[in-house]
Amino acid sequence: MMRNLLGKWLLLAAVCSFFVGCQQLAEEEDIPQKGGVLNVKARSAADTEVFYPMSLYAFTVDGACAASQTIASETDAIGLQLPAGAYRVVLVSGDPEVYTFPANPTLDSLIQLEGTAGASSPLMMGMADVTIGTDTEARLELILSYAVASIDVALTELPEEVSEVTVTLSSFYGALQMNGSYVEAGQPLVMSCTQGEDQTWRTDTCYVFPGSTIETVFSIRLKMADSSEVTYGYTWKDSPKANHPYHIYGNYSSGITLGGNFVIGGWDEATDVEFEFGAVSQSESDGGSSEEPGINVSELPEQGSIWNGAIVASVGEADSEGVDLLLLSLDEWDIYTDQVEELISGYSVNGMAGWRLPTYEEAQLLRNSFSDTNRTDLNERIAEYDAELVGIDGEERYLCNKSGSYYSFIFAGGTTITQCGTQRSYYARLVKDVRVTN
Image 1 (cartoon, one colour):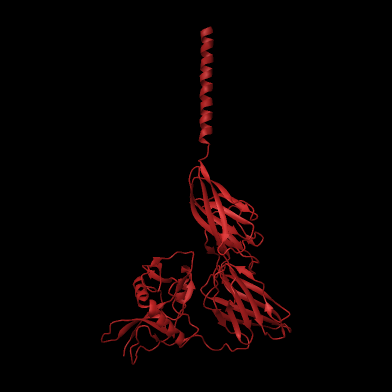
Image 2: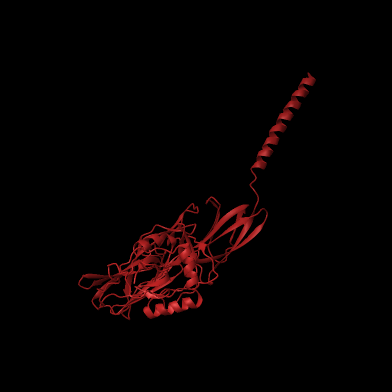
């Protein structure tokens, strides 16, 4: 009896020991993977003002948010406790009362700009890819740049009977993904002007995501004291870019200038563009003849010359029927790769359509033919032909096409032709094949 009772107690102790051992094992399995601390230092590209609050996010490789932090002021320490692994770290500086931020963000989530009036303060973004090891402390310095364009307008010498002025620009992106891509194309920017004591009509500075088309339509609506209205329009063959300021100065009788007499610290250099409105006639056509130009010439054009409104990029071997020319456009654009098709479909010169991006081999020819002094000579001819045209840049990258993919090249010897990304813009000049006889 005593032996049986002792056996039962031993059996009970063994069972209890088994369950206690499982419980401890389960607790050990619940211990998270060790990681490290990521300390972040943030600054702007030119040490300009950074707007608070800032939001810091760490996204995993599948786009999920692993950790986040809100930084209320410059005195707050910036850092995240992260499990070991690879992350895309995104830092955003922007007023949550102006921009709409996602509540539960992923890399595809949107930062949105509501309405058509733009924002009263800029949005800045910086990002980097980091790997966190176990039991380590990592440091990351993120440089913030403006994710928006800055735009303001000043119009002078408008008629006294004008009582209200509205300037509309079309079109822009309406949202920015956490991964840095712009979406929701086609949003207009509507800006109201206020007349000052100097009789100049001005808008406030507003901030907007970059243009979503390769061209920008300006519409200036003037409302008169008798309630009549008139709108003046112009199509600018470019679009606002992020991190660029655009100052629009206009005179009712002598035209409007889009560009910059000054550049805000930290912003990239502005682009100058001019167009006419108001008392100046707009009946003149920007284009040439709609008829196909003749291919018979008395003298074959030379490489590097300007012929029929384009640059002669190359002259082929002549045969009994004529010679093939490769023409390069005098016009130049600063565009994203997703804007190429729209540009190509609508472009013509003196009635000549069918322009395209250079092929990879043609890009090599252009680079080798117009480098160094040859490029300088060509730019001088372009300036003599039309002082308002820009010359070929020897440092910026230009688009070309390699087997259906976008590549870019530089008009400089010894440089490489590399595949394009989607987060930046590139310069573009189009080419066209033409056959001539003499």
